[in-house]
Every structure is written in C-alpha cells, then in structure tokens.
Length: 417
Image 1 (spheres, rainbow, N blue to C red):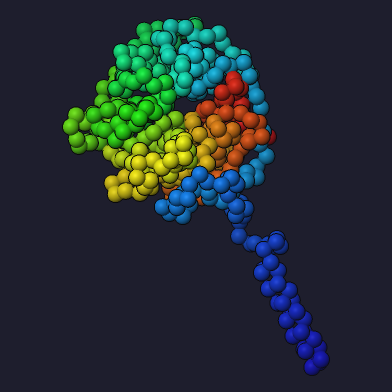
Image 2: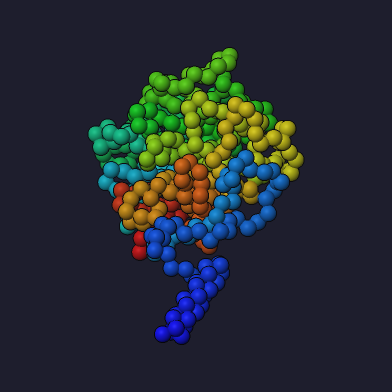
C-alpha cells in the first residue's frame, strides 16, 4: 500500500513537470478553456520596411501594431475591369453601385458586372494631376428625390478649387438634371494636387466634406487658417450653407462651416457604426499617413506637427510631432500606404470583421483592415496585397459584401466564401 502511494505521488509530480514545461514553451499549442479571440494576433507588425524617420510615437499602439489574420474563409472577385480611373463608390437603394470616374463621368454597375453608359450632364471637371470627379453620396431620400451629391475639382479664377455639387438623376439613369454647385472651398490656387474630395451625410442630414490644402508652399499654411476652407473638414447643409451646431473657431474671418482644421490631403471619411463619430484618413508626406478620430472644433496639426518628412528628406517646420492644442492621430504609417476611401464593416457575413475599418491603400496596393478597440488600433491586416492594385475607394453594399475600386478600373467584391 505504501509503495502504491509513493508511486502515485511520483506520477503526479511527473505530470506537473510536463505541464509546466509545455506552458513555458511559446511554440506549443496550449488548450484554453476560454473562447478563442475573434481576431488572433501573431505579435509582429504587417509593416516590415524601415521607417523614414526616427520619430517616436506619442503612445503605444499609435503605429506598427500587431498583425491580425482573418480566419473566416473569404473571396475577392473582379466584377468588372472596364471602369476608367474610378474614384468614388456608393450603393443605390436597389443594391447597384454608383461610381464616379476621375475624367468626369458617373456609371452604374450591377452586382453581376454590367456597366452602364456614362451619365451625362455633370459640370466640367479639371482632371489634371490629382483632380477630377471625386467622391459622391446619395441623398437619404434618394428613392423619392433622386438627388446625388459629389465633389470635384473646378476651374475658377486663380486656378482650381475643391467644389461640391448636387443634381437629380433622371429616371432613365442617363443624365444629371439641374446640376448646381453648392459650395466652393476657397481660396483657389494653381495647384492640381491635394483636393481631399470625400463627402457623406451625417446623422442630422447635413454634409461632411474633406478638403486638401492644395500642396503649394503658399497654400500649405492655410490648413491652420480659419478664414480658409482648404485643409479642413467642413459641415454644410444640402444647400451649401454652414450647418447649425457647427463648432465655433476663433480668429479673424473664421468660417462658420468649419468642422475641424489642420489637415493635409484627407481622402477618406467614414462614420463609426456604433458611436456615430467621424473617422478620417489623410495622406502624409514622406511618412506620416494618418488615421484620425475627428472631434468637432479640433486642430489636427498639419503642417506644424507631423510624423513625416518633406519628399526631399528634409524635416517639416520645426520637426515636432506634438504640440498643445493639437490632436494626435489615432494611428500613423511610416512608410506611407497612401490611405484613400474607407468604410466600417457592419454585418454577419464575416463576424470577426464587425466594426473593423477598411481603407483602400494606393501606394500600399492593398486594403488595410484595422481592428479598433476603445478608439485604439489593436490589429492590422493587409488584404489583397498580391494584386498590385491601387485601391481608391471601398464601400459596403446592401448585401453586406465589401466593394472596392482600383485606379486600374477594377471593381472587386469581397465576401465570405
């Protein structure tokens, strides 16, 4: 009996040693009675190239967070490749997609890939450089009023300007009737870069529009000037007037339509599906692409603070990344990915994507998936990175699939297998 008891004690000790050995070995798979996380991480960032700067982030998780990997099988199919430099995409009430093309046309595309003839009646655009027919959205009452809103680069005295227009789509879907320019983001300049160009409706039925600072050395500082509408997020009514409830900026000639200031070239805006807050992405220079959570009345720093350099490699301004009274980006990229249009995922087709942010990357040639927890980016994934496509915009269709357009003219549908 004594020998049996001693043998039992030795057996228990041996099992305990093996268990401890396994738990200390990170390469072993340990069974966990707790549910697996929806988005497993690998502990390494997706970005493997060296940064352009030696700047330090302001907080942990501001850049190069852990990689995440989608576990749900999904597929990406090309619906059509016959578009010409598509720039903006949105869903119509029947599930078809309305798309702008940079040269100045709109088209409707069905889920099976049938592309309409060009929709005519759109005012002329300046499609040189980064300009053209840009972002768009439809009126919440589109089914009855057939109203479309869009952003474009317009020729005016003194150069070009970021403008907002609206018009009615005819029942034949061949023409825009009564096109009207409702807003112009002054001042104009002779630059054909950094127009911004995204537009969406907020929960109050007003329009949020992103404008760029036009890239010139003399216009860049105007991102900080409250009497100029460039380098800003603006909030206007459907008639182009300043919306009620806008924040009040102090300073000579402060514009009542301003919502936030201090932006470089914001090409992505989206409303969070839970909080309703506005999120925005913008192009940095050499390093320093940003993701921002926009707070009304706030200053996002450009060109005073930045995590990037001049394209020449020289520092920008005083080479500072933080300053009192200026907001930090939630996340930044160095090297850049050139973030463009973006959307939050909401739906059940791929549950682990719920409330994740998807951003089209131009120079990065992928779609960035960001997992956001308590307004902090906690995971990053690169989708479709092997296709060598510049992803210009992305939206979620009424069927819950993601639809992404590329500069090469492709329209992708991304959904569960």
